[in-house]
Image (cartoon, rainbow, N blue to C red; front, side, top):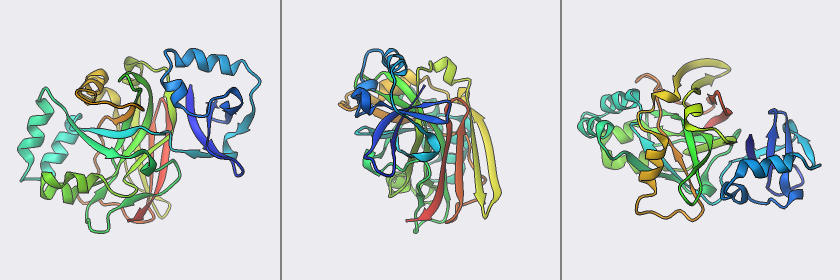
Length: 285
């Protein structure tokens, strides 16, 4: 089941259910004006099934604009959760190589703040590359959707845009490399009801097109993430309070080669087999 936020040409943002990736059931008529009402419930799937039995308005998916599937949740990210990510981070920075090597095997994961909800980019909208960076890449990631109790209630697709030359220069520059305008995209919707074992069977694929031609593609499996999802969520909620829940990116296992950098006009397409596709053009910010 896919939970989304959407707009028509004449409406404010609404909450809907995506059916067969072709139609949207408008939940406004059922009194659902925020996703949080479902994400915070004790049994979101049961509630959704009740709505599907009602005669609620349906719209063709092609006629609506999908908004980012985030309301008031902070977006955080985990780093160095894939072996490939550890290798790439070591290669990009002689200065910080030992830190990346140690955190991959440490009990405590790397966690960092990524975005306020109002700054998250939706499917179809532009993601940004820093004008003061020379080496910019997307990082395709599975994102955990957590309620205020720290429970994993869904999954979505994330793009953790990164400036590798800035981060590689000095580990203390990580916030500048990771947190800037249009640096975080989420979408196209939230997939409800999948267990961790189910999600670990999904694949993640990245394709980058330039002037209509593919310039990079890569693929990995979710089961390559070293840490359990509940472990990552548990560390995020330690000594922390998220009254509206949180979204946690789980790291990337796809890293373009060192000679590659994004350019304005590129199109980044991320597909997670169990969820769908998140696609965004690139602009300079």
